[in-house]
Length: 301
Image 1 (cartoon, one colour):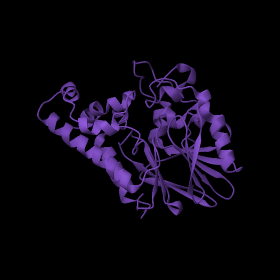
Image 2 (cartoon, one colour; image 1 turned 30 degrees about the vertical axis):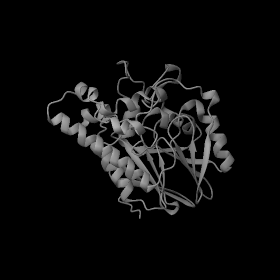
Image 3 (tube, one colour; image 1 turned 90 degrees about the vertical axis):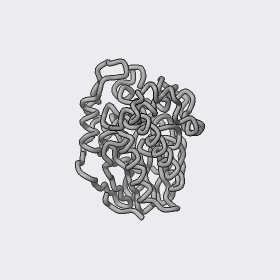
Image 4 (cartoon, one colour; image 1 turned 180 degrees about the horizontal axis):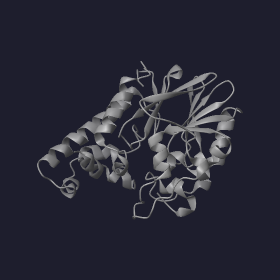
């Protein structure tokens, strides 16, 4: 079914400053990395931050995303429990620090970091923080060493092939979805998820229309056996992705209709147009999920 068409205290530096996915610094010392075997040498790792995907080949490993920098040793230990082989490639789905924070440590180990050129630009020239403070560029060792432009690219090691597809202006302007076709596994980054309403980073080109298009793309390249590794949440099926897309479309339809009638952003928020959806998607304490109606409103042209 697949085709090749294919934030926080400054002590953690740019990795956290670039991440809008966490409202306050977690206790990394208590973090645990949970592994889920997806078959065909593919394992999903879930810790504090975005989900990761480990693809074990015959002489090395491909790793999708790296969570936060302080988790590097725990992530390495979790990988070592799967395979003693070295990580050869890190593939980044987008620039936020809960997905790229560990890149510097892997980069210092000689790992090739692969991402879109747009992602590299965001790491080098991050937008201002939530309070207007200047963004801190990623360290040199944490920058992608292999970038791509256009629709996509391919990363291969003996025994594993990852197909990278750039989906424009969805969660950010530099998103990559990764397909491991032989295993029927898709790593979506924050374009798809089931933990809460998604963050749409409108400050760097994200849009509700791009999110819907991205969900459509993932669904179109899935079947009933596909295992979808979302940016946040548990392993998803095609049916789960369809339910997620329905939520996005419903939210866009209602908010676009209100905006067309002349309602302001605050009026839309105060009207609680998504009250029924909130029961599943508005997770208490998740500030970014709470801003979902604002971000949808702002991204509708």
